[in-house]
Image: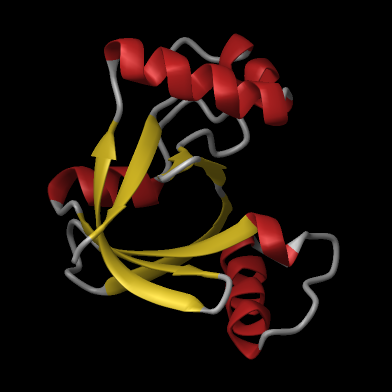
Amino acid sequence: MDAKEINRRVVEQFRAGGDIPGMHRDRLLLLTTTGRSSGKSRTTPMMFHRDGDHLYVVASDNGAKKDPSWYRNLMKDASVGVEVGDEKYDAVASTVEGDERATAWASITAANPFFLEHQAGVEREIPVVELNRVS
C-alpha cells in the first residue's frame, strides 16, 4: 500500500472517530492545505505538539531530504484547515524561526526525541510550523 492510500485511510478513520491501527489518535491532527499547483484541497494526517497555547507540526517527513508537499503548499498559501480531536477550524500556518524555533524545537524534541535523529540525517533545517487559529 502506498503512502497516499495509507493517508487516505488514516483521514477516513480519524474523521469517523475510531481507532487508527498503529497510531495514537490523540497525537494526530489533520492539516488541509491548498495544492500549490493544482489549487485543490489536500489533507494530510500528522503528529502535532502542543505547548501551552501553541500548536506545532514538524515538516520532517520522516527525515526526508526535501520538505514535504504539505509544507511547500503552505509556503504558497498559509491559510489551512485543522482538525484536532473533535474540533475543526481555520488557521494560519507560520514557520517559526530564530529563538522561537529553538524554544519550540527543544520542547518538541524533549517529547519526541526521534525528531533529533531525523534532523541529524539531513542537511536542511527541518521546519517547525505553528498553527494559529483564525478568530
